[in-house]
Length: 262
Image (tube, rainbow, N blue to C red; front, top):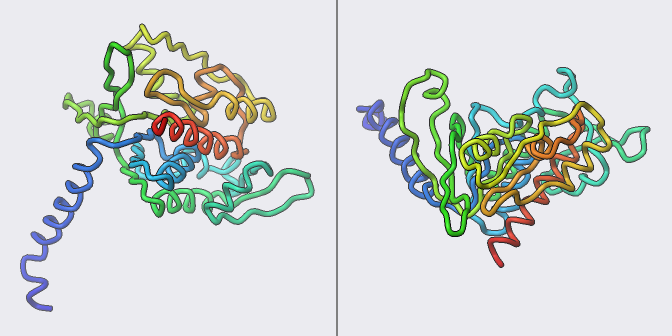
């Protein structure tokens, strides 16, 4: 034991750097980059990893769950529709039946924790504190081929530091209401003709249906899921009901799997 604690500080640093860099060497070229560790992004990550695709999720914050954590106005419960129960079952998330047919209640902390653990247990890597600030593209044909990433702390400090680049076969915007990746692409690659309409005010039933319906490929190599879909297509927000987010994540994974394996 005494030998173990000799130069322990050096050993701690060595292990962290060594094992982190091992992961980063794998991440530098991957099958799928998902931007945002919210409900749609984590759901997609699990199903993609389950099917053998090398998947990394970049999350700018040091937490999981996107909008789940706040529940409904800081009440610790959220609502999920019956259509999404199979996804909750896949992640082993408990839900309570209610007296309103077709609607179920879920604990927000459990939903966040188990979506994250489900994605990681399936083999997806989740890296916190990383902001995706740009994309990689190629012409002839015009296609998105990856992302430019930066430590969020560098972005917040307003330092000028060049990003690193991660190549991928697919990039998924799962950043929520701001549709951060789509916003960058629409501004910097105008020939792709992406125009964000911005989400509309709340209309829960329609919003849930349309976010799932419109989930999918935006341009070659770039996909949208979750509330980024609403921001792109101008569909309504829905508040603290999350079935559409889960179903959107499942759907985008199915579309990417079909595209990559075809």
